[in-house]
Amino acid sequence: MCVPGCQEAIHHALSRRRVFAAAATFAATAVAPSSAIAAPRSFKRVVDLTHIMSADFPTFDGTPGIDMQKAKDLKKDGYNLYQWRLNEHSGTHLDAPIHFSEAGMTAEQIPAETLVVPLAVVNVADKAAKDPDYQLSRSDLAAWEHQHGRLPDNCCVAMHSGWARNASDQAKYVGRDANGVMHFPGIAPDAAAWLIKERKVAGLAVDTLSLDHGASKDFKTHVLWLPGGRWGLENVAGLDRVPAAGTMLVVGLAKVKGATGGPARLFALV
Ligand SMILES: [Zn+2]
Image (cartoon, rainbow, N blue to C red; front, side, top):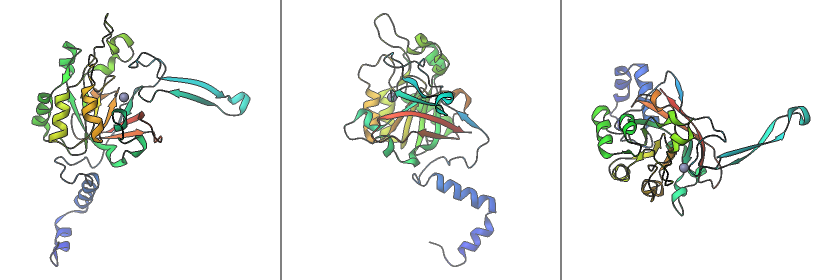
């Protein structure tokens, strides 16, 4: 509500630039009007947070995530074309809610406004370097908020464990021991539970094979997180090249009907 003359007064008070910035902020936070940190209004560079997908990229069960067969050849057919046989959950990819629920959203049902979100990067690389079973904790989230303010609504909380640099070394990335147990960092179930209860987060991201740490047997973080309509990103690259706060994440997820997730090209707008 605005009393007569109020609009004019506002326009006089704000420069053109500030009016535009306010509009941009409103647009960016329209789905989450109570966002504590305004989304950035512009960006200087785009950081690709995506690993190169290939049959060599480490997978959870050890089988190649993609098989590419040449179906058409330029010399013979006039154009090149491959057919892919693909595991939805391989390479840099998204877990849709249906991945761990009976009736959760499938990939094509995830609203676009929850796939372009503020990115909060929680750095646990020092701890993970000492302990490959490290789980991002509530105190890591508290430390992030102490430094950067309350996690913005509709954000993605990303674990930067430093694991992305191991992606070219299958054995190191998977960390499988003599008993077949995997060892890589993940997000602690109680940290996920706290985010669900106390904050409004759209998605979690990890730079490892799974939201749950490698040794997990019950996938409790997945079980808590996905059925509530939230998504997860796994095998994220390049988190060491983006600031802890103030960037936007664009999740370019393939829109495949009924999919439980799928490869995603991730861009951080810095
Ligand atoms: Zn997955």
